[in-house]
Length: 227
Image (cartoon, rainbow, N blue to C red):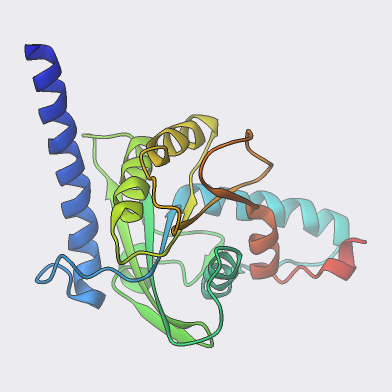
């Protein structure tokens, strides 16, 4: 009994840690630190190191295949594509973008803009889909990145204001943890989309999208070039 209570307390403490971290990073653009009940209808949570690695791999492969230089990925374009894949449509939407990264990561080498602290965290942009506010959070030693993203996805999906959640984890272990965390979400009105480089195992109360398509678009690779 005592172990079970301790486990529940530990889980609660961890959830509060993640929630405070997310709120602290959203504060600059959305003022949710002073008003923690405020969430956007749309939330994107992504492993920044993973998308940077995939962008690099795609760049190397397609430069060889197409025999031309591939420019750095347009971060705003990639975010737009993820939002569209997640169900966001043209209009005056608000989208919160949370990029989770290793503590040592200072920039995304294969994206523009690239500076985590100087060009991404706390910044925002507007386009035909609405306003996007960006936050970047380094993972501390207290938790693994996979655990952090899974808990962040669960917490965001639990907010009644949030209608759409788009999650980009890293490897199979991270997919499994996100999948497990989302099992606790029983609101059928939520649209949760999980992105991966290949189809994930069947089941789960979320949709699946291929990450490579959005990154190819952000890299300026056109479909007709690879037919």
